[in-house]
Every structure is written in structure tokens, then in C-alpha cells.
Picture 1 (cartoon, helix red, strand yellow):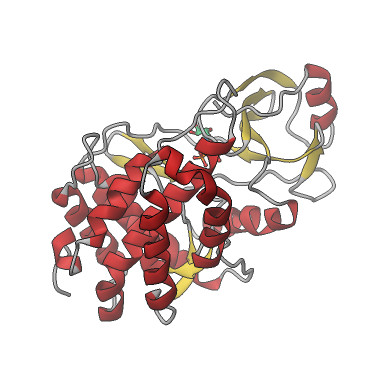
Picture 2 (picture 1 turned 30 degrees about the vertical axis):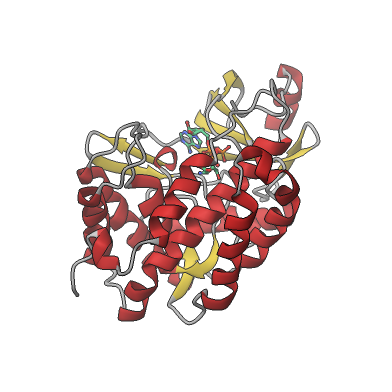
Amino acid sequence: MAVYTDISEEELAAYLKGYAIGETLSYKGIAEGSENSNFLLHTTGGVFILTLYEKRVERAELPFFLGLMQHLAQKGINCPLPVARSDGELIGELAGRPAAIITFLEGVWMRRPTATHCREVGRALAGMHVAGADFSMHRPNRLSVAGWKELWERARPMADSYEPGLVAEIDAEFAAFEKGWPVDLPTGVIHADLFPDNVFFLGNSLSGLIDFYFACNDLFAYDLATCINAWCFEKDHSFNQTKARALLAGYQSVRPLEEAERRALPLLARGSALRFMLTRLYDWLTIPDGALVQKRDPMEFIRRLRFHRHIATAAEYGLKDA
Ligand SMILES: Nc1ncnc2c1ncn2[C@@H]1O[C@H](COP(=O)(O)OP(=O)(O)OP(=O)(O)O)[C@@H](O)[C@H]1O
Ligand SMILES: N[C@@H](CCO)C(=O)O
């Protein structure tokens, strides 16, 4: 569940006075998600999502995330549109937290995505990469190699208690990344967390992308590698090449990969697996049992990391020649 901060009717009514979206009809906390507190809000002016930003989102970075959603929506990408307050600002404060209201997107996320869904996701990801090209703001990826290292330093003393041998294994991974992480591939604005729960569908048609709170400037191919990790493994942890082939073909139908991006894909997928393993491990080891927060299993991504370590070329993911 992700309602870290609850709000009272009175607090909400006072907050909504800052907007021109009418009066509250109903609101309820949304259990899904793990980063911020989200509420489904019905007002006399429509249906919205109210978000209170929690631990991993810094207030100073909100203009980037909300500005990006505005930019992408203007470019025809289906994503939530931030609602401006009457004073023109996009960000307010509620219950001591930075807060924003965004439009509600129709659709549901796919618990069991098929190759058809994966193809759509690939196309949408590339569409976002292209549409973000002239977004003027910049945000470095705080969860790239240096950020992973910080997380690892904090988790490392407890890591062997979670999985014996993990300390030596991950230390060795860092040696590989610090030496070989690519820096000269095409970059731009990436989503950086495009998991199934952040993509809505109506039937087989993709109806929208949400949750831009990890978005940043980084390698396009890294974003694609994250989608391989997020969409192309089965519940039994096996890799599904049919889905990956569809994802990669969908992506390339909009933005063909350069040769250097193709070559880098296995290492990028390995790094992406490490990134999600680390945030999960850190939460696993530090969030107390019984807290009303859904903890995600780091093991899934330790397995993916081990899988990618043995991939020699992107053809093994089903990537076709250009
Ligand atoms: N614009 C929107 N339209 C419809 N539903 C939304 C919207 N934004 C968020 N939601 C709902 O809220 C849930 C949580 O949102 P979101 O993924 O942004 O939260 P989070 O805490 O940042 O989660 P995550 O763990 O994925 O980072 C979504 O699964 C979805 O059900
Ligand atoms: N998508 C992330 C959670 C939000 O960052 C994960 O599955 O670990």
C-alpha cells in the first residue's frame, strides 16, 4: 500500500480552495504504488489523482517531473496533465508534504502482459524518447552507478544476512560497472521506471504512461534495458524471448537503435537489474515489518542480474539486425 501520509476532510477542503476544480465529492487512498501517497479524488470539476510526495522525491525536483508531464502531454503522449493552482503554481503543500493534483487516466495495468502489450510498450517508450528531445529542463539520474554505490554502501553490511554471498557478488558487479559503463550513447529524457504498473491499457491498446518520478536525462538504451527487465520475465523468473523481441521491435519501429546501443544492451540490462535490486534490498532491510508499505522482493532482480551476466550479445534478447 502506499498511503504514508493520511489527510483529513478538513485538510483536503482547505487545500482545494487553492484550485479551481470545485468541491470534494469523495476521496480515497490508493493502495498500489510504493513511493508516494496517492489519493483518487472526485470533485465537482472531475476525477483527479492527488499525490503527496514522500521520501525519494525531492521538492526541488518536482518542477522537472511535472513540467515533463506537461511537455509530453502537449506532444501527444498520453500521460497525466498536472492541474495548475489558482495562483499558477503546480505544487502546493498538504499535511506537511509537497503535493500536486494531476488528471486521471483511464485504463488498467496488465498483470499478465502479452507480447502484444510488450510491442506497444516499446513503441510508447521510443515515442516518449523522441517527444522529450526538446524538453528544456535537465535532471541527472541519481540512480545510476554513483547512486547505486551509495545505496549499496548502506545495504552492504546487512546484505549477506539476506542472501549469503551477496556482498562478494555485488562488489564484483561494481568493479565491472565502474570499468565498463557506457557514457557515449544517445541520451535524452528517460522514464527510468516503466514497469507494468506504470502503463495503462484499454484492451490491447496502450492508453497512457504514469509515474514520471524517476524520469531523468540518461541513456535511451538504459530505459529500454529496464523495460526488458520489467516486462520480459515470467513469474517463474524465466526469460521470455518472444516478449523481448516484440518490445525491441516496437521500440525500433519508432527509434532504431544505433550499433553501439545494441552492443551495450546486455551490460545496461545487468546494470538496470542491479538498480532495482538495490532499491528493493534497501527497503527490504530498512522498512520495519508490519509497516503499511508493500515491500518488493529483491531476489527477482538478483536472478535477472545473474541472467544478463551470461548474455553475450543483444541477439540473445531477440534483437533483430537493423
Ligand atoms: N494519472 C493517473 N490516473 C489514474 N490512476 C493513477 C494515476 N496516477 C496514479 N494512479 C494510480 O495510483 C497508483 C500508484 O501511482 P504511482 O505508480 O504513481 O505511485 P508510486 O507510489 O510512485 O508507485 P511506484 O511504486 O510504481 O513508483 C497507480 O497504480 C494507479 O492505480
Ligand atoms: N518499479 C520499482 C518500484 C518503484 O521504483 C520496482 O519494481 O522495484
